[in-house]
Image (cartoon, rainbow, N blue to C red; front, side, top):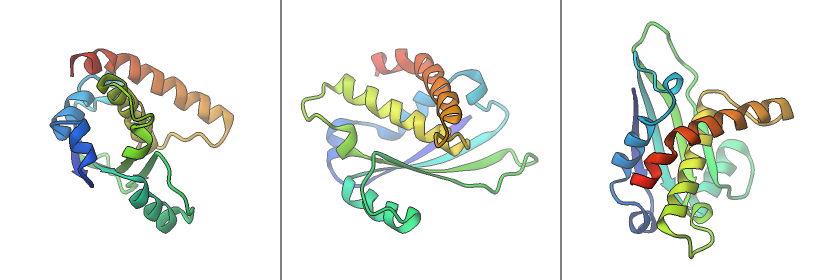
Amino acid sequence: MIKVNVLTEGKTWSKKLKKKEFFFNNLCKFFPKKFQFKQKKILITLLLSNNENIKKLNKKFRNINKHTDILSFPFHQKSKAIKEIYLGDIIISINYINKPKNLSLYEFKEKLVKIFIHGFLHLLNFDHIRKKDYLKMLKEEQKIYESVHKFIKLN
């Protein structure tokens, strides 16, 4: 089972997404079975932020002085004996998700879900530096998105 702890910076997120923690925790219930971790409690922290703050984090932790759509920080101390695993942190910038400004609520949630899935896979050590890895990650992103697409329509 996946538990997402959601933190928010700024008021813009609240205008776009009500019941953020409920949204992300229910979203994860629609993931394909191999990503639901039924026998373990998987914990993730999600920070819904903005370009200004994500730029600071990107500079501090990756030495890249620019904003980005998402940052993922996997927590690598895992033990198979422990039933509770902290996967890591995901930070998403509203400035990327909310472009263009005239997105419908459905389009906004669709972009948000896609980028969350991307960050989630990074926490599971997927990457896209090499083309082979990019294609593998893209395939998994598409599988998860197809699985959760009906959730977006309902919420």
